Amino acid sequence: MGNDIAIKVTDLEKVYKLYDKPSDRLKEALHIGRGKHHTEHRALKGVNMTIRQGECVGIIGTNGSGKSTILKIITGVLSQTAGEVEVNGRISALLELGAGFNMEYNGIENIYLNGTMIGFSKKEIDQKLDEILAFADIGDYVYQPAKTYSSGMFVRLAFAVAINIDPEILIVDEALSVGDVFFQAKCYHKFEEFKEMGKTIVFVSHDLSSISKYCDRVVLLNQGIKLGEGAPKQMIDTYKQVLVGQYTAPEAEGERLLDDEQLRAMAAKGVDGSKLDGCNPDLLEYGSKKAQITEYYITDEKGTRTSTVIKGSAFTIHMRVEMTERIAAPIFAFTIKNVRGTEITGTNTMFEKAFLESVEAGETKEITFTQDMNLQGGDYLLSLGVTGYEEDDFTVYHRLYDVLNVTVISDKDTVGFYDMNSKVTVK
Image (spheres, rainbow, N blue to C red):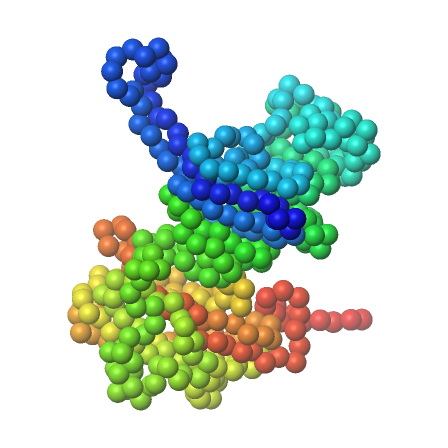
């Protein structure tokens, strides 16, 4: 393994034996009867992954995709069925809530237990104890048995141990979602410090905003298979396709861009879809096409088409949708993301209670969303969608990701994504 590689996973397989009842496990162990008494579940199917030192890599996927399993194999909690795992560096892991804790021990005793399991001596833990207690900040509960802790206390203490023991590789599996917002902010600040120090972080979370913000690269798993890896925005967009059942493998993908028929239709309306102001020629498109977005653009407060909006001014998002089949209650939506793929804001006609009617095949709807631009100055990406529910199942009719670049011009930027337009007085 190269000197710059922290973790390398090669052809990793994990198979679980599932038994209908405990007696079946006993029968198989004693070779009673013929054949197998179990069914097999392949949690990981030939997964390959390389993580370099100093990277922050996110792993995303639906429940049951194998995210936690691969982390447990990397940390040695589980053994793989096949394949190889190589780790170069001391690992500190925050996996399941309370993992590595003895419920009868108090907090101090569990700190030493966890530190010893990671591979530190008592002397090394002694030197870090004050930092751990300060970060956890659970007060006198640290002297109480762990069985009396709330879930938040577990997380605070476990994370305090994991990051203050000075690991070379930090592995975190969803645990931060349990802590309160102030503790989460403190943890993410620590992530930033770790990245600056060149530490390696492997991060599993359903919080796509955090994945987008902190990760250099993202691995997408689904049903034990690695669907892909790459930039956070790219993988998050693909993950969203998986969530609504619209994902197809790259080699089998159909139309990702607007097809010739759509471009001709847009040209007939006076809109060149390939040359729209701020239009993305490599937009991501999918859906059943029972409804199709055939035109889209932005106008400023004067009604002029543009991709540049002055902060504080009104602007309107326009979309034209043609129905190819009858739809009981279509939902028209937009979202605005930053360039890293974090969704900043958005709404739809269902949220706004603006349109709750059925539409017939052949109908065309013109939808506009008008609002004030309160985002900070910079570049953003607009995505559009038409969705709905069919017999309680969420359905995507047409989605266009990152169709337009929106540039916000500002002479005053505040903290964060948007401006609260504070009225300030000083006396």
